[in-house]
Image (cartoon, rainbow, N blue to C red; front, side, top):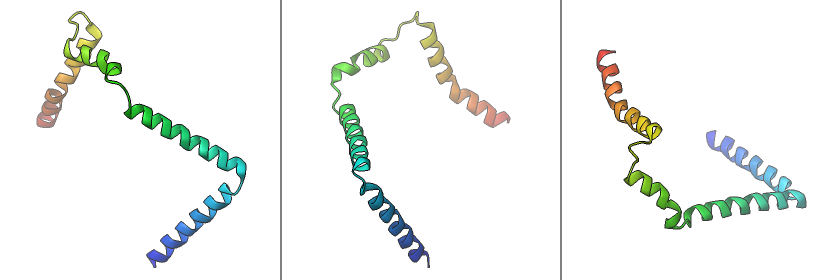
Length: 90
């Protein structure tokens, strides 16, 4: 019984997709969305290492006078301690 329901659902989605794409304007929109998504994905994976250098530089050599960054690191370092204390003492 469950297979019949799933097949009917897939058939309905297929029919809706075909009827949506039968209109040329909708096909152009879908093609544009697909192309845009593909370009963004490829540009993400094809980044040059030089684009990441500032991030790596900051991570490897933090500035001791960057108080906001140090505060964030301190809070992150204390997360495990706070979690343990809360779990232990409830």
